Length: 193
Image (cartoon, rainbow, N blue to C red; front, top):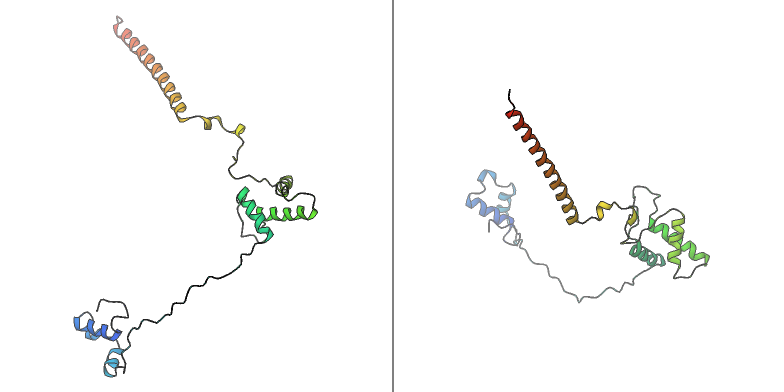
């Protein structure tokens, strides 16, 4: 009981008393309140009683989902383009995200009534492109294929074969140079002085 830290096993007084009996707490280190509590104990011991909680049947909250027209546009934007080319800069109070610019342009084009509802999304992206905002679809390459470095297209096996060819060519030139130097050294050694 002395090692227990839970209040439901005895009271603070009984735990301190037991620690003093065991010699863990010395007589000179006992708490100030200990003698007062021993002289005037409470009429009822303070015991831990688990609070009674009545279990109510679970009721589901019937909160209706609230969707605005802009939420549908934003959802379609994020599914098509992701988060856009720029990160959110929340340090600036006047920052407008790419998605918000898209929604504003979408509403502007919708208010003119020139476009069908189905083509309005594509027309909005074209209008933003005309304003200088480039939107990349998810999964599309960020660099055009014709501008890529040809080394990136090589396979690892091709690169290894090429490296081995250059190493073998270097070994051949090294061995021929070694043979030439050996023959020159032999001819120098055999010359009469």
